[in-house]
Structures are given as C-alpha cells and as structure tokens.
Image (cartoon, rainbow, N blue to C red; front, side, top):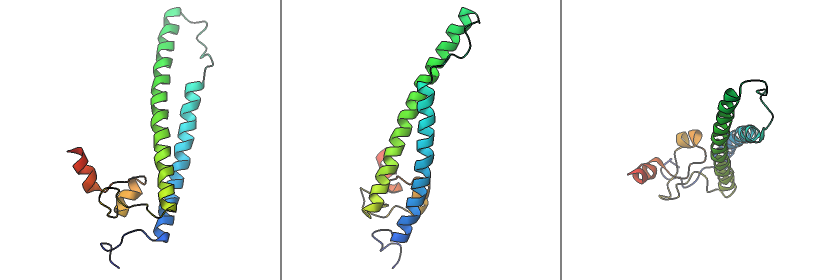
Length: 128
C-alpha cells in the first residue's frame, strides 16, 4: 500500500508518535511546574537593607517577570492540553489525519509538531 492510499497510520507508527508526545508532555509539565513555582514564589530577595528606590525598581521587575511567567504558564498549559488531545487521537486511531482535508499529515511535520491537526496546505490557506 503506497503512502498516498493510506488513510491512517499503522499501530507501530502511532506507537512511535505516542513516545514522542509522551516525552514532550513530560518536559512540558516540568516546565509548567517551574513557571508556576516562579509565579507563586513570594520570598524576599534580600532587598530589605537596600535603598527604597532600588527596592521599588526590583519589585517592578519582579511584577513584570510574574506577569511574563503567567503568560508563559498559560501558553504551556495550552500546549499540554494539545499534547493530551493528540494522545486521545492516537487511542482513537485518528491521529495524523488533517481535520480539514482528511489527508494524512506527513510524518516529518508530526515529528516536529506532534499535536498538529492540519496539514501544511490547509494551514497555509488559513493564513491567507
């Protein structure tokens, strides 16, 4: 059976993608936990004995970094959800099928973006 005729990936191929996704998921959850720890970390940075001006500047920087960490944590959470949804598609054997065209998404794309649900053609047409 040629690549063009295939309507879904084999169980062996799905197992390979599952491994990739599980690795990325573990790393993403680890990164998410680090970001959450950054946001909830409230200990003093030892500026009690420095000038008030310096303390205000440092608190401003800490606020900015908390906001930035919050945004990054949100993005990371969304990424985790996409990876978990991809695992469900693997279980349903619908993984790697473009949700618009119904064609198989190339393996090369899935290895780079394992949570992809659109083939490149559809994705590029969406941008226009």
